[in-house]
Image (cartoon, rainbow, N blue to C red; front, side):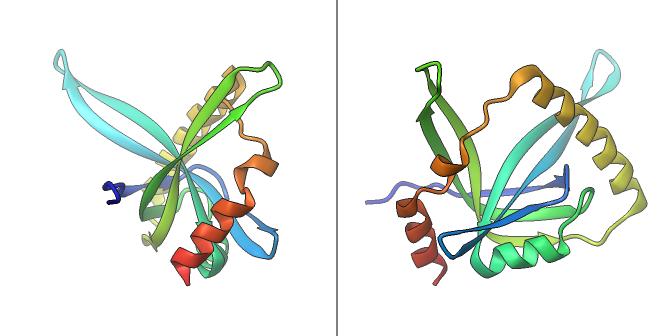
Length: 152
């Protein structure tokens, strides 16, 4: 029996999508930022979270054409954890959203301003040293075949 692994998330693209093909499969990746606002000691606080998203096949083509930095999106998919051993011998892991459905929101001026601010924060995280999965392990053949079968 499969366990439940499903996610629905809304946010804004932090940067333009990155599109490539791997063994004949179209792949589009992008990062979205979500904002959470809450009250803390009488002031309104904002918490930003960043999520990597990967799409495949025709969905990847559509995301590449329609997506751009600042664009609002709603993503439906599942969480996938990639694990690998780095050059230092340590085990690394990263969670990515494997999208099955992506909706694009109409572009609004204020969304662009929020996205620019989120992009600055994301760049700071990148400078600190976020784990980056090597491309050759990111789309191993078995995972690409599994996703291609699910899309078909």
